[in-house]
Length: 331
Image (cartoon, rainbow, N blue to C red; front, side):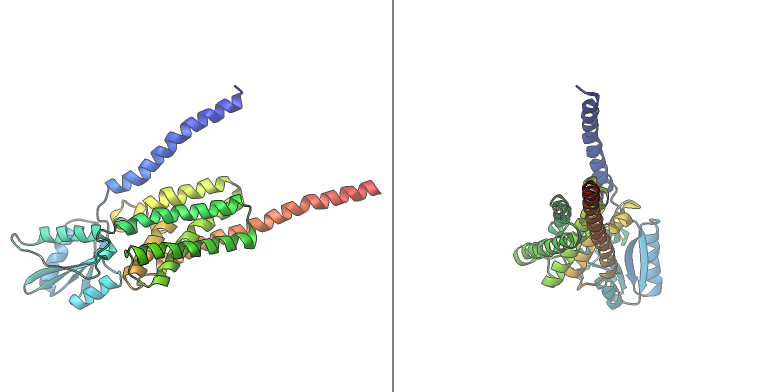
């Protein structure tokens, strides 16, 4: 067997366990380290009692980011605006907890346990779900499971555009059109059929379409710039890291640092956050994830356009050289 073939065989043998180990690290490590890290939580009520509750939260350094509010109405507004995940309201009857299971059932359960354990023995803390998850998906399982298929769809779209040789305006049109159709099909299933999304239909479709475009365009763009290996590189970034670091099944603030922050700078994490906002919170806190998705999509589309122009010049060069040769021979 030639030496080159031997080297390829050895590379293939080593590559598979390397990818498997990387995938295990990317998915298992964050999941095994779930804990609050600067988790935004509100405290509302009279100063002395509210300060005592703040001190109880501060007994876990770095776990919670406390926001003070004057009353329960202000705390509710902060939850609906996605400023905090929940709030403890101090009343004459005792503490009450406001949560938002639509923002993350894992966080709502964590806050319920934390506030319950901090209350005086024998005291039952009433819990009000301000923005509840839909009855068809009370644990957020369907929403969490939808991000991986969207990541795969985006990678597939970028790969198909590359393998079909679509560049320039044709490549951009295929990516945008495909992403729009994926958005419509996805919301038709998750909203109209399953009922796990409850927001404005077309806004949800736009959020899904932008997410798919922000994944597919960089795949095709990297392939246009560096060749076919760009597909694999982008797939590892979007599916392996982007999906596992997205925090959609829990919350970005529950993941180890800096994974939670990094995940929100990648399209799957930003897309999950945007979809949750438009589906359950009337689009509140949409700006940051939309900016991230738009930046990724713009980068990919510009790269596809630039790659198309470069390939056109490459194809024109041989024809020019051939014309010079024919003229020389004729002379």
